[in-house]
Amino acid sequence: MHVLCVVPARLGCTRLHHKPLRLLAGQPLIRRVAERVREFDLGGPLVVATDDRRVADAVRGLGVHAVLTSPAHRSGTERVAEVARRAEFAGFDVIVNVQGDEPFVPAAAVTGAVERIARGDDIGTAAAPLAPEHAADPSKVKVTLNAMGHAVSFTRSFAPSALHHVGVYAYRRDALLRWVGSKPVPEEMAESLEQVRPLALGMTIGVAVLDHEALPGIDTEDDLALAELSFGAGVPLSAHRRGDRGEA
Image (cartoon, rainbow, N blue to C red; front, side, top):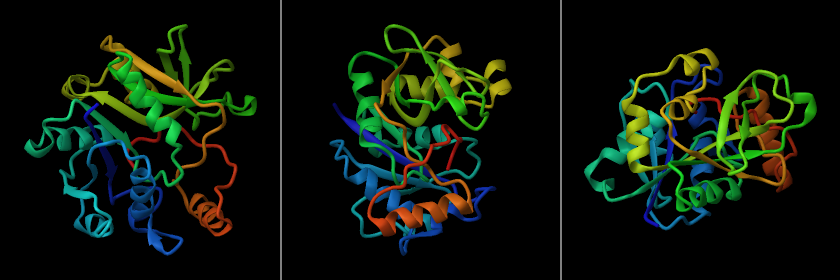
């Protein structure tokens, strides 16, 4: 399968100033994420897509592509789609999106999302067990599945039997372009979750289910401090991931 992997990273994050350039174990966060994703060896190029040249400069020497994209994008999906439309990447049928603040993204989430595409789904993603005490937490995005492993709904509301959505995506090219070419739907606006849109459009979203809770992305100063400790210990801390947070 011809796979293009894109890591979208926006410099102007509101919750953690200049997040992609913040240091994690002595290196910019975006570089740590690119190093992690490079380990998966998906068989195609790895692209860091950003709105700022300083972020592009931070991944120099890693053997990855750095692409400057429009600052007007509202989501990582839109930024990934801009890369996918470029002439040099037009030959890729499958595009993977790994958020730029995920230095501990599980390999099984990424490869599992791609496997869902291979099985015929329009979009692939991943989910992990959700601790019961987090079932009502609006910062945890929940996904419910049908018997075929397809997403039926995504929500921030109380969902005791749901799984915790891991914000990794694999898209068929036509599904990605249809997603970003369509207007937001009311359900998406109500939940503040962009992945509700392809469901409303009738696309299938196959979900790879992990057998353990996923590790945290980095949204805040506290998250960064925990990540620093985990790198120092040589092993990621066991912490709950916050789910889909939009673009890094």
